Image (cartoon, rainbow, N blue to C red; front, top):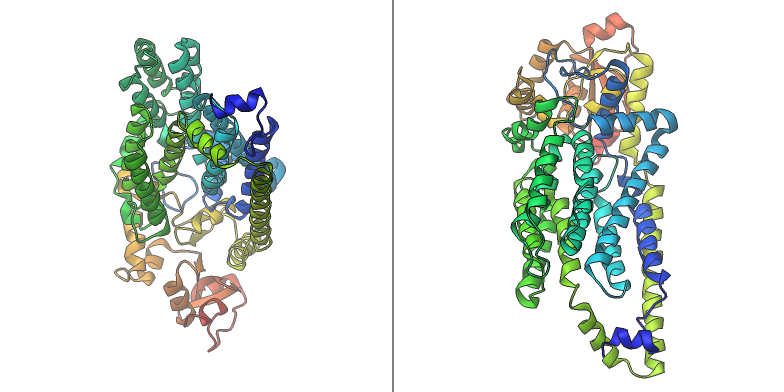
Length: 522
């Protein structure tokens, strides 16, 4: 007799828990993750997303980029619906309300994954609860106020519905899929193929245990493909992902756009988990369905191509883990029970597990509270306060030089920035006008003189960040051609000497002492 069946008859097990305990474990993991990762929730990309949402709400849909100083750049806001949603919430309840909304989305993701675990692991609820808790700690580190959380929800909800169809063979589980695809298409156009990647695994690999019909899947796939065209940009919205793939984004030198590499932390984590999964599958030979091994291989290929796809690989790994423990968990727990016979041993195991969970929870909580107390850090405060000062003391709509990371923030406050974090926009293949990304990198590398860039664009103000662009920060500080009009820790605002004199700004004297942000590394 199975150990867990014996527990139901009347046996006592140190691992047998009340029905509510698995839910409590998942809830605690979620709340601790929210506290631990709170400082990472407010992502820098949110500023251009908010600007996009505001533009659409005020002026309607556009195909020519409005925020930058460049004229006539073709631009398709591929996350228009999430941008409108973000701006609507932010304008009503501010930053805290928007963060709370994305925590709700994260909660939906965790609940869906737990439901998938309960469906796949037909046994004690504590097993999928433990895997869900691990999933929560891991995946919430990648959740912030960006539309990526919707991509995760699409993968898990698609897997849940297709698993129900696999087991029951009832086509009613396929009906929500086109609706989900329409929503995803408008929230994050670039990632509409995700549902088809998951669906292809179920279409190509039909399990012998559940020989469901493929025809309904094929019809559903066709309807989903047609539903992709339900967006304000029609065919252009559908083909946006193909056009963006034709651009070599690796030249932007942004970590998340680079192929997975051991040279950065993203890549190291990816290859470590990839190695662990390979060893686990090779030696333990878990009974994982071929469909999910195929899906996992696709996500591995995507992660190798660009680091921003690594979280999709992690998510697929946890789904594979659910299937790996679907049949083997009872054998594992039977072995545990065989080693725990006496009441004294059972009490010791319960005490050890309780102590471990309590100490671990307190440690995570302490780390999270410490992180929150340090957020935002001094550099981020300096960046935002400098942007606010400029908004209060300069005409809205002025042309401002910014680096890649800071452009979105200045655009949010109404300025025309030189460049911002929308990498695809600044390649000629996408904007149809000019390769601004290469121009910016030529300036950063010294191939293009900054004075030539200023002469070409006639910047009204120069917003320079000593953390992300230390060379220019120091170069402007020692240059006699530029006047410093504002300085706050690592961020400064300059004007050409001529424009500063005409505008009447009070020049801040430059001394022989380096700015505070550079003095430690000079």
